[in-house]
Length: 209
Image 1 (cartoon, rainbow, N blue to C red):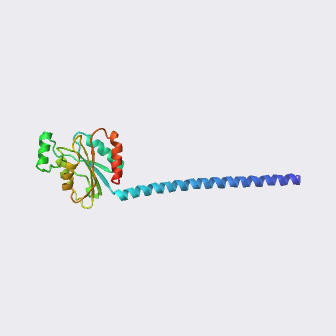
Image 2: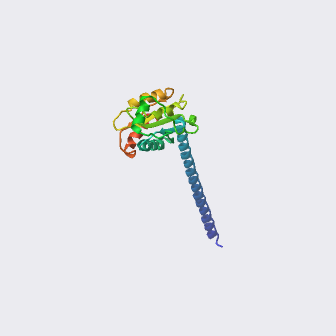
């Protein structure tokens, strides 16, 4: 074989090997970089979640809803803050809502509950939702709060009312949850949960959730 031709072939082979090595080295490095970036992103997301959980602690969104309106807002809040939902229910249904409910509010009665959340002591933050009746909280809300040791816990009221402000009901919340840290509540005057989502999100941001 011609010596010159042989040298040419060897040079071509060397160049090919070099190019191939550079290609695979670059590809491996790119794949490693992508994996590293993905791992960093996952760690950051995990840390963000852990930081949020550490800040807010275990959250319970408890609510009493007679017509279903307050329940809709409780569902939205639960999704926004990642809290567990619990419906507060009366052990016995009202025989006459307007007569019975007004009487137990005026007489500071504590109607019996159908049940309480399991391991309620695990929750650090309790959102408490209710309709406003006669400018007050339904009496069942006071029963619920007074069945929990709220020492060191945070209570956050939210309520629905087309006319009354939240201030009247806050007197009941302050009495029944006197050992808790009570944050600014939210009154929703009407409309669907979806139409009030901006108001809910702004409120949650303002109170740190």
